[in-house]
Length: 142
Length: 80
Image 1 (tube, rainbow over the protein chains, first blue to last red):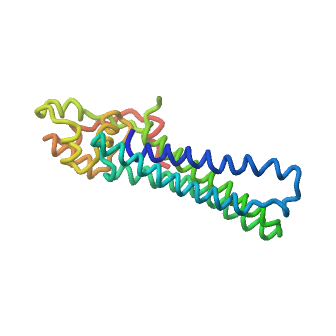
Image 2 (image 1 turned 180 degrees about the horizontal axis):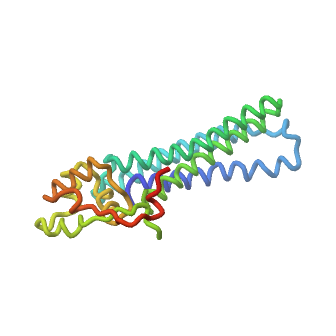
Image 3 (image 1 turned 45 degrees about the vertical axis):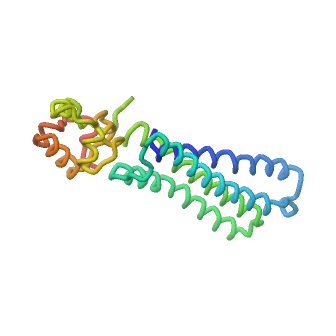
């Protein structure tokens, strides 16, 4: 597996785990508490910081392991660029859905809880979809 | 597994015929990564026309001697 495929795998795992844990602790509260009283801001920001930190750690670990095996980490050619473009293209469809959802909820004067978490959920989904497309193209072809 | 391309090639055989050239050697000479050479050899990626010409030139053959495309129409041959 190439550096890029390893990174796509790691990022997909991070995007599934950390936001997954955030939503898992959040959703039970929705059933029992009015959403206006749910303190979601600090956990949300902590989760985002966690995603950034885990991603940096993943890049460092994968880079070091690749360097020890004399595997190139910074090479890029037309196939890599095509795969990235395909991932961006498919991921952007979900990202547009996130933007439309955010605007729609704002126009409907929904509570900030729903706007923030709705946009977050679809943004995370866009990242996961992008990683899945990139990984599939690396492993099965493009 | 369905291959994403109907283009086939003789790169592997021609590498060995050209003094056991490694995938890394070929990749370096045409400016690709070794992973991309592997993907091309396995039919998981169709290179650009420019890269196909470079590969053929390095292997000392014409592009049609290295890369092949079936003559009968297939599901991927329709113009959209």
